[in-house]
Image (cartoon, rainbow, N blue to C red; front, side, top):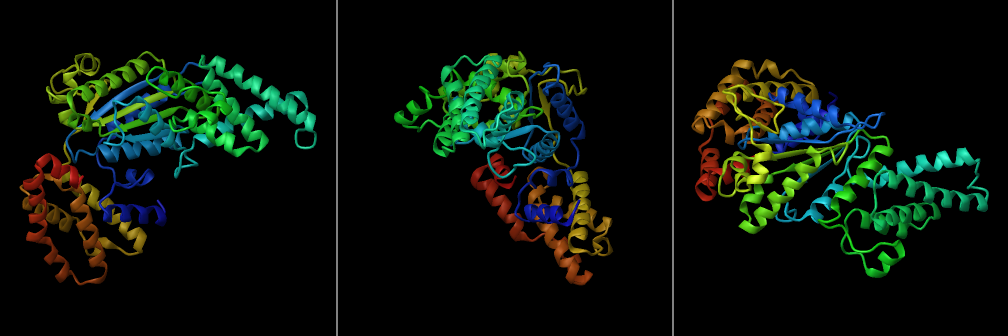
Length: 441
């Protein structure tokens, strides 16, 4: 780990956030078995040279403070470094699971690669594929499109034909999808950026494209529940042809569905069932769905997944006493405990030393950390599940202070202030325990 990575981790924790991507793995405590099980799944579903790709899914769930966010960040980093495309969706009022069109658009907008992490990478991905096809045609037919107009025209014609042929291999029968990709290619080669941009926007699920623009692209309608899987299959084929290992889609905070009215909940769970059926039958080769939620999402019989019998029967775990079967669709994460707080504190202490070039162990010993964790957990009735981020924010403050101040002052910080306790307890009184934990974590 370098200093820049360490700074990003400390800043994220100071702000009460989970460090992004590779930062999370440096402070991850526990869940190695769950991580390895999902990475094994990714290796199974990835695109292979013999064309024998698969698809799959897993749902991880547990209480707030069980480390779902940390685990997802670590998995994203591992997937990116293994040449996967990733896309993360957070279910909310603006991104509702009952609306397939919105989910598809969010997948497209959220796509990232190891090289392009700050914005949607789809244009980069499709350009990479087109560039490969273009280079093969130029080499095969000995064309010189840069200096010869006739060769340039030949290239465009042959490239359009090749794209149509390739999309046919992906079983893309929707003429509008084919036309959108071809129009993007034409705009790219001719320098018509407007045509290229609008064609890509339509393929990405933009529903606000005027009729005259659609006509110029050669498309009708837009993505909807009836054709969304054909869009996804085409997307996956393009990802494969661009040389990537597959697509990891993370759908986070699925428990938000529980807050919707009954008819919307049912449609959301029905969409989830359709997605699970598609990947379970290998109908989306190279795609892996990772869903996250709370205990209530699984166990609430009135508003949770159990409300939708067809969905629950597909993911219902087989219970064999206290034996955990990580190959099952559902993986339950346990609560964060005091030993993990101690472990993560040691890791943060180490990172702080690297970033600020000092020896924090000279003042913040293992014994101090144990005492501080005990003091912190005792202050909140030993309910560790609502503490991790508040604890880490405070612990970083202690490290900062320890670097400058004498130990006599630092030891006084072992006493947790009444103000901190009151703030968390006030949240519990105002919003209830579940909402207070959500605000904290």
